[in-house]
Image (tube, rainbow, N blue to C red; front, side, top):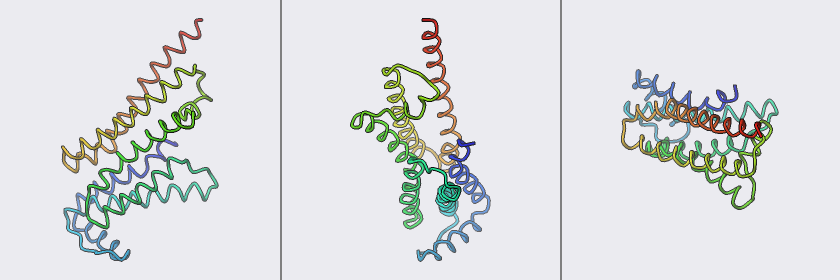
Length: 208
């Protein structure tokens, strides 16, 4: 359930974009009214509307995530705060300037921020955040924890690169679909491969 909760802004982004593509004039009207209400230039054409509406929905969904957790007096993960800050800044720039570049960079900035946090904590604080999150379920030697941490750093860096490649070499619709399905698919594949590698290591440890 937590995974689904974490993905809600991405899911709502995809649903809003897909719906707006089928009714671009209505989407343009909604976005124009929203921007006018925020004191911005409300002129939006039908071609821009789907991505702008999806961006607005993603911003609201991320705020709703944080608000829900705070209302229930649950801890808001640092990564969610980071995600909120990035979507507000880059999503807000997309809405204000009518420039899709900012929202297309959002996944990459988020992935690279995660990579920087993991690497920075390891290098400067001598703290393995992957170990902190997973040591309750796994017992591994320090060298394996370090390798696991670096593998996540590499994965997030690669995901950021792939996002930009898709964003600038394929259509907007393809990028939106990749943002949800491609991102989830690659994440699942990476976790499965990691699980297989760790299972072999754990089995060899148990035989000793």
